[in-house]
Image (cartoon, rainbow, N blue to C red; front, side, top):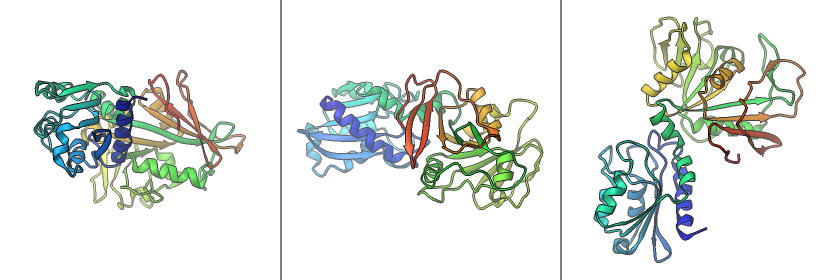
Length: 352
């Protein structure tokens, strides 16, 4: 590992601290190094607040050292005015002589302009250090801005013989997750801006779809209920957490509960994606059931899939969704449960 790679890897570590609150902005980390010593670090913690480069500069006690330092940043410094001034201008004003960039910003308002502004000011700029890793870091941002839809993660647990539940019209679901994997599900919820289930899951499981076993904000709850058949006694409809019901009917919204009318004569998934894009929802977690999950898979509307493979054998029941061929899985273990992780179109997958 080269020196530049070492510090860009540190930038990546820092950037991940912004996973929950940076969106819809990308996660970015920055490190300032003077004579082989880190003198400042920062990351983009929250949308509307200081960018990683600004926070790293603020962390430097002796600002005179900046004129003999290297700034490492996982993503190209911005060159436009948004909610904050351009980072490229700030870097130039501080007299930092060298900048190492992980990857170019795909956003059209930046996309190479920040690098050009730095070079025009006489700053030495190196681009493309750990580029693939830095691009993976902003994959949600890229999907949202290029495909104009949220980054979609599918998740389910299945038995050893490929079922997600028993056949039932009432009663509690089969518990295939362990306490440890259940906590991880709440972590995933905290890391997504919205969560979606279908009518059957909402009616039979009566889920809260909140973050109870992890730190973070509850995601926007979404449920598909074409004919508005779900009983209002369900936790999803209690108004305690903002919830959107996708339906074919007209129904006035009330506090905490909004009804959005879709055309069920057409594929509803593109309509849901358009609605979430309009609401600036950058990431979506889909938890069930099989019909809804399979529709996302068949429509190619997914980016990551997590499947818990429990050891229990059900013999019969509701079949689990089928992951499309050509997407190899990496496997990890959580409390004795194998968790398969699939990534769409990535060529290789990250270890779970």
